[in-house]
Every structure is written in C-alpha cells, then in structure tokens.
Image 1 (spheres, one colour):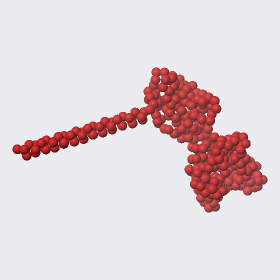
Image 2 (image 1 turned 180 degrees about the horizontal axis):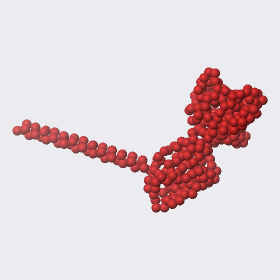
Image 3 (image 1 turned 45 degrees about the horizontal axis):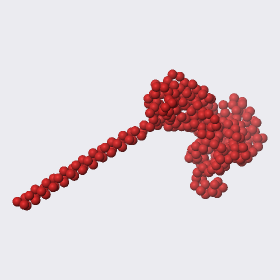
Image 4 (image 1 turned 135 degrees about the horizontal axis):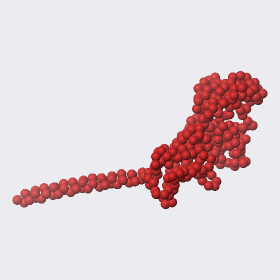
Length: 356
C-alpha cells in the first residue's frame, strides 16, 4: 500500500515536472515571438526616419556627362498643410549665402542663380519634387540637398551628382611646377576642362592614373597618384595618392590636374609634316581649329580615339592618343595620351589634331 502511494506520488511529480517544462517552453517561445516582433517593428520604424520625404532617395547618386539632361530625385511621402521645397547645392568652402537653385510650393516655383536658369521641377505626379538640370556643365558635379520647409519639422535628403569624365595632368610649357593655384584653375579652363576634385583624382587613380608630378586640386590641396611605387616617386611605400596637403594659393607653385567630359564636337587628325603655324592653317582649311588638350582626352576616353601619330595641339604641345596599346606606338602597355612635350614650333615633323 505504501509502495503504491509512493509510486503514485512519483508519477504525479513526473507529470507536474513535465507540465512545468511545457509551460517553460511555451513561455520561451512566446517570449521569443514577442522579442522577434519587437525587433521587426523597431527595424521598420528606424528605416523610415523622415515623415515627409522618401529617405533614402530613389538614387543616392546620379551620373551624367557634360551636355546631358539629368534628374535628381526627391519624392514626398506626404504633404504638410503649408510647406516649401528648397533645392541647394552644398559647397562647404563657399563664402556667403548658400547656393539656392530652386524654391517651390504647391502652386509655383522660382529659380535662383546661374544654375537655376537650367533647372526645373519634374512634377511627374503630385508628390514629385525632383529637380531637372539641363545641359550639364563640368562644374555641376557635387552634392545637392532637397529640403522640405514647413517651419516646424524641416526635413532634407542629399543626392550626389557625378559628372562622368577623365582627369589629365598638365604641366606648363615653361617647365615643371610653374602654376599658382589661380593659374592652375585658369589653365584647366583654357584646355576645355576644370580643375579636378580629390574624388575625381581618386577615381582616376583606381582606373590606372600613375603620375609622378604633384598638382593642384579644386580645394587648393596638392597631390599626385602612384600605381607603381618607385624611389623617385614617394619611395617604396604602397600605391596610393600622395599628399602635400593644403598650400598657399598665391605663393606655392605646382602642376595641375584637370578634368573634362564628353564634347559636342569631334577630333580628327591631318597627316603631314607641319610646323605649329602650318598645322593651324591645315585645321582652318577644314573648318576647324587645333584641338585643346581636354578635347583630345575626351575623344580618347569616350570615342576610344586611337592614332599612332604625333600631332600639334593648340597649346603648342605634340601628343597622340592610344586606345589599343602596341609596341610601336609609345611602347607602354596601358592605353593613354602620349606626349612629346613642347617641341620647337618651327620643326616640320608632325601632323595636326583638329577639332570642330
């Protein structure tokens, strides 16, 4: 009898233990479900940080070439009762008021500045505040901000506009390291370009630009890109962009890195043995002018221009573009624009690169 009672007691205790274990499992699962639901809810809440603007925007970066028409996206999720949308170009080094491009509300928009004259709102639908820019310039690249202003909960999103192009180093006809910062900017403009930014030089380096002379950049810093480290170019350290840091814009002198993009015209070669002056006449007889450095680089980059003959250019230099490297055309394994420097302009040795 006592044995039976003990057996029943042990059996009851087993069922109680099993019941408690089942409850614990159920509680654990329930707790896990609540925790999981909480994570999902939190993540969803964090993904939508802004109340009125779609963030992130449809495209965080828009890419275009000179002359293209592009759209910088900005979409409203909902509209406050009273609001304005303000488009600005962010320029950290700008002195003075911010660079406003466009102000708009639900009924009208007003453009501002030189960029505003080429800008408009897309207005594809009632919630569309996207900015359209026509006929891109080299200087249009950068970061743009779309800001919803309602006086209480202002919001903004940023979009990067990248101009697709090519960086080219440039040295004075008078020799190495002759440009102040202001002269470097002017020189790039004269060669159908603009002074390159650090991000443009960095991309050019990733694409193979290896240059042992230091040059000015847009922010008045001085750098040079190295793919193949050697003793005379920054020593035997790793490949990268060597930096001299910020320099005095008026006193310090270096070469320059310029940036250009596609052109509306075309470069062509006239064979012959011309002096510099004769080369100019040969181009004009074809309704053209001697090509600028930026125009030749653009043809090489975007049209894959390949010509194994040295030719005069407008700055008095002699160069030739190679897209298909071979031993008897410069001897280097990489594509590029080869240079003979600035020879005597009276020499009758070269053809002419023309642009029209």
